[in-house]
Amino acid sequence: MNDENLCPGADATRPAKADGPPYAECVLCREPTEYPDSYKGITLCPVCAWQEAQRTACSG
Image (cartoon, rainbow, N blue to C red; front, side):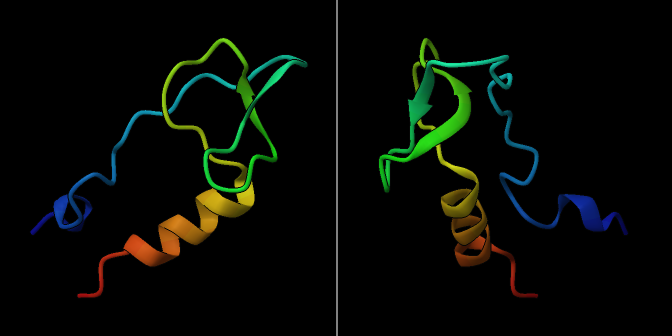
């Protein structure tokens, strides 16, 4: 059995990291993220990304 496919969305794609400012702001806390300001979509700072991953982690 392949454990990698047990958690849906685990392979979600992420935007490319920015080389420098300006950075997009986190949609939850409005802190700068590691993604370019030109990225359109949901961006999370490292702290909120970690918290979201903990919240949505598979429990099985």
